[in-house]
Image (tube, rainbow, N blue to C red; front, side, top):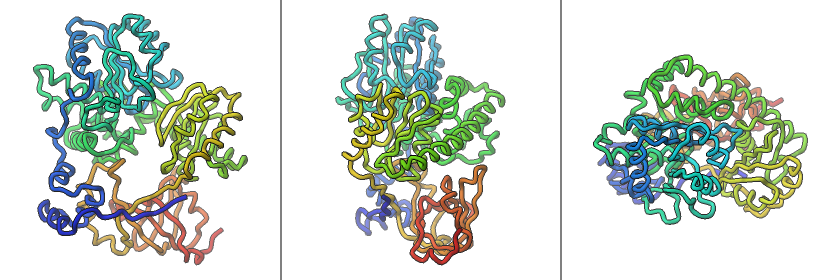
Length: 554
């Protein structure tokens, strides 16, 4: 079930106008800030003008001091260090941040990212691989390790010190390792708990530079691009330090990108970088190698300034292949859902001949279409789950743990592993478990009702002051009721997008174009939309108005 809700205004109107004059920005923009809880002069200043000086002391993170001391010892003694990451963008960027820094300090360091078939996180078998390849005395995990208790015990038995840097939820007790850096620790004293894996690695590097003779204020620019990419790609809340990293990273990417990004922008014809550029262009390219190829390729590219068009073309072509796979396998999932009428279930669970690296995207698209939680299970028994509203997918799965090999995640997304001969039992159990959760209500918020005809009066340019947009700081959304739509055009490689013509403007609907493909004449729609460039708007959601019976439809 969907619900559209206008955001409530917080604070006094007098204070709003006072701050609007103080910062010389349109009162409408200030109203958006107020609706997001930014109501004081200091809060507005920090939001609009993020600065390096706003970063917290990295040594406030628990175990940061012993972790840095052990790392410096390893550097001085020329010990073999291995950085062990994850195959998604956050894991790739956090590994690259750490590798670049330790290379800078002339350490004997190697980086290793697991393939999808190896599974998530550091395991006993992963440590065995690292031993056979590198014989390390120190392993530093990034974006994983918080719940790898068996691996920690094995490493200790082998005489290997492990520093865990992570940001994931801690399911039970802290891992028994040399140092454990995670802002979600139960005894955490760090002021900001929502860092990405790349953000935690960034803070580690900050602490390392602060313990050296080198200026962090100078060298921060060598790492902030990657921290920005990892933070936005991992859909972290863009508030606090995440906003600072994202804002400074986007600034660097626009003003003075590193050679790798400069060449990539040339190949992709990117002239300006915004949060959407990262979310929809850059992140999928780096994510694709982790999904269907080798993420170590992306890491090696990001760790050097000496790259070639050939290596970047490989990333781009891999992403094209990933798009094709996603389209074909989403069609397969849809066929199964319709044949078995799974859309009628409280949770949609579909298993089939799916690629392990694509199941998360398929689950997200199913959930987005049916507004229900979903689980997609691959041919190898790997599962990826997505949720909606306040429905806890991890609680739902946890109640069915007896049918699974392993699982993990949080309220909105989770992963699991299952023997396929137990799928039928699991499917029945998860349906019963889903009924114990509250019915998912997708509540979509908008900032104000603004009909299309009033859009030119809106201060569109000043919206950029609110960048970067993302989780907890979404692009402003407006409501347009009963819009008279002149015509609808379906477009795109797989005809999955739609273009709506109304009020001398074009409104673009991405990924859900087929839901309007039956319209062959004028109609009326209620829209939630965000303004875009060139007299266009991006449709966030839609419904047919009461008067939409006017058009003829197939």
